[in-house]
Amino acid sequence: MKRLYVVLSMLMAASMILTACGGSAAAPAVCKTDASGCAVFSAGQSIVIGMGAPMTGDNAAFGQDISQAAKLAVSDAGQFQGFSFSLDAEDDGGTAEGGAAVANKFVANPAVVAIAGHIFSGATAAAIPIYEKAAIPMMSPSATNPKLTTTGSKVFNRDVFTDAAQGKFAAAYLYNKLGVKDLAIMHDGQAYGQGLAQVVKDQFTALGGNVVAFTAITPGQSDYSAPLADIASKKPQALFYGGYTAEAVVVINQMKAAGLTGVTFFGDDGTFGQDFLDRTAANGEGAYSTSLIPAASDAKTKFDAAYLAAYGQPAGKLSPYSWTAYDSVAVLIKAVESVAVVSGGKLYIPRAALVSAVRATSNYVGLSGTIGCDATGECSASGPVFNVDKGGKWVPAQ
Image (cartoon, rainbow, N blue to C red):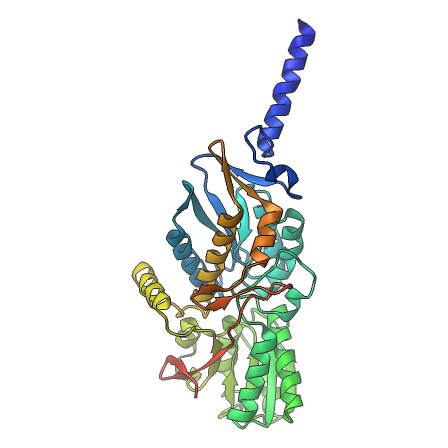
């Protein structure tokens, strides 16, 4: 009798373990053959799409905008076979340390199946190896550092143009369109800002231009007058800045006092948004920035109206990533639906199969254009749009 009790207890324990791992009798065969097993959802549980973004601090506008657009994508997706989706946007501060911390939090949650992010390149680079081990696919709407798709990662993808494209077009615009021959370059020393600045330097030089300064600043400071004065002594016609709004605002507000009156400020997509306009006021007049505002379409018109109704401000006001953010979540949800299986009242999502499904995205017509991923995870077919500050508003540059 005692032996029978022990055997029954062992069988019950084994059953509990199998159920927790998606290996119950009701689990589909794919969960046994998938290299990374299945995420399992019971009735009433939500399928979670994670997002790592700066939700507080000087660059919170990016996280606010991108998460808001992502929530609209979740809402529009509705339910799949009776199961709903949800977005979990965690504050990673836009830093490598924060990116790793948020990634570890997400992989510890079995309900998280995909990541719409991370948002900043430095945080993304730190998070990729963590998601790689857990077989959780990513689709970043804004991490543009070219190196992110050169590591051989199977999980990282993005639906935004790279800094290689942005830098090339920015250098050409400065040299050919604005007639700049002597260019100063300043960057924040981080993965995104410095990487982009280097591309601009290389491309501008290749065109025949002269880079008179290539200067790094320390993020988070309130006074950049010393490096700006040094740059002023080199007499540039324009100043290209690689980095984010917080530091760009300080730079542009101190340019005149440093002797850079009449020098054109040319920012990147990290400086685009209403926050830049509000904080630079008259000092920002004539400044350039990059965005990826997509071409007009019925879908974009519908989204723009929904965004305005939901949040009381237009899409693209806080950051240039409203549309790619929506698309990143929509693509991930479509991939989930393509591999998910319902059995015995539960939903099973094979993780390795989902990683492959995201990378196999092809001819998906989104708000930002047609999305299709190559073998490295580059999924965007669109390029940058340049804008200029006129009277406190961003307008398309000529």
